[in-house]
Length: 472
Image 1 (cartoon, one colour):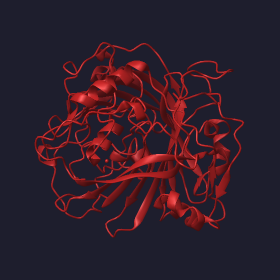
Image 2 (cartoon, rainbow, N blue to C red):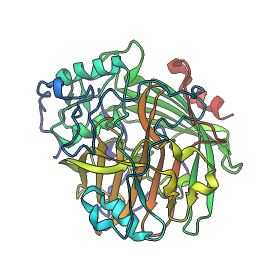
Image 3 (cartoon, rainbow, N blue to C red):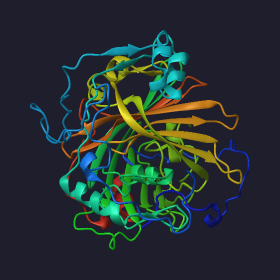
Image 4 (cartoon, helix red, strand yellow):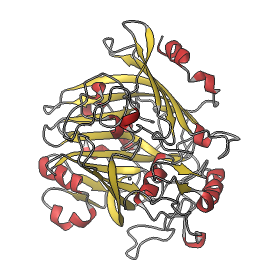
């Protein structure tokens, strides 16, 4: 059982190492959808986790109790069923917390009063847009939940999961969180990569590239994802180094329509590289895409997102040294049902999305840091990830350039998809603090919820031939 994302560059045909972390990949317009829609490397023979005392923990290993002040409540099972009025998968989510009032709002003027609970990226956003950006803070609702069988698998994984010898993959885990009580940064990383996101999801959503003046372009895509790590009737032995399979095609605008991508994601891409294909609409054929990895710029995202920015972080962790910075109480985007309830035109504002349609809450997060190894190149020299302890989702990522300057601030606006249930991003936002541009990924289309649920298809639905049919 292995990792996901790009393999060792020495295994990539035609790849040449460069030492400049700001050197750019050749531009190529490829799209990676929303549902794809972080201590040093583990030493050889990394030990299995210590026995977990579940009495004080949630089924995913978070602290069950609230904090001393009561600003973070105890976890009491989360949101496990839809609220009244929900019409089912494919319809807009009903906000179960619509009656909650804002507790307080963080602005540039009162930033100093809340600095200990704000990531550097959020602080920079407040300073960059002092007249428009604000952080509305609501009561903390620990709404995360998952099916019982995922909880059961997590308990089994706690006794058997381990990092591979080089620390770049995992073994002995299936169908749940591998390391519910992590002791190393890479264990936190793998918890995010393998977290519960369902078994099979279909998605139709908007991506937006927003310029400094507020003008924007929209791209519409359809996506299908099969999560082999959570396959019905699956097992550790049956995984065969598979994490998920993904199909995605752009349907609008017309100049980009009928382009598509197929990805076979592995658990350890340093041992067995991810396989990827694109559909070339000009030649009407499917082509291999071996360099879809690391800091390859995503053309459809106006170069505001790299390949390994997708899902906040993904792929092989081999280019970075990893440190576990501990656990903190931080303000993060959470229960963002209002984000998709309204017009896209009013949501997308200069510099950032409309703060009135966002929701932040105080939650415990694991903080992990990745620093670029001197022998490798990447546009980011340093990255810091803030991982929700309840769901193991990276909620905020701060990315630094080769001069050590904070360059980009990325946010995952989480909410409970109670039809699963699972905590997933309602949308992602990737902010370029220098240019004032930003990219949003995964917005709802036509007032409908982006995600729908269908029966899990066979693996034959995710082949190069299937990509050709999917695009057409």
